[in-house]
Image (cartoon, rainbow, N blue to C red; front, side):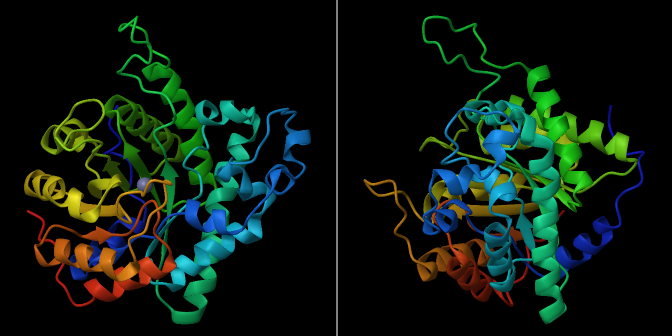
Length: 342
Ligand SMILES: [Zn+2]
């Protein structure tokens, strides 16, 4: 079931024209910004724990803040937009029934995705009212905390904690909510298992068919080790060939590594992909306390190198990046040509 007979959403030609003209900017991390708010259990849970009958602690359930601290989340999106982001992600990385099961919050998933997209739209409209620049809501779809191609049990390599159909069902629900809330495109990110991503792509196609139009897809893998492979064992080239049937707006890499370590893998991907490319590295590698020390200018200098080498069409930041990182990245790539697409 491929959706290419469906009418494309009006965002396609707009994004395509912009991406040919200049390097587009994606936003940075939510986690670091949320941490700074210093929220306690009751700030996280609000009245959601009662309404959804969850007896799990909610502290750390960052996606739930869409419903319990909407103004704080909107402010973070707004700061990224004003820092120069053209594309801003929803705070819905874990807003699937599979990931929310850890918090007993499965029943909140539809609201999280619908409201998650609406909050970004509000923030972006405020920014556009100030400077007139068009901006786009990317519905963020994370990998979930389970993997469909690898057993979590070393004594039972055939065991799977999740199946393709479980993932497809969960992702369909998420993507329907994101579309209902007004997402302009869908970003499937931090892909460590390509089979999970394939379920997400399939779910997008189903949701597009229901909606009667297709949205641009951004697909972003994660290289998890120095040998340059994803957790499910693919090189960047193999990863591209596994997802190219989706005809994504961008394919790229995010997370796990800082920009310096990501560069050769990004170069490989940019060498084979006939879509636009996107890279949003972490702010370096985490220190012994799991924190990211790389400053905005350092990250920006390395991302600008990606641009000078003709590797990228969209750039942003992942873990540890802040609005200052995004502003520095946007400044550093201004005037540099976007990667030429075959
Ligand atoms: Zn990351």
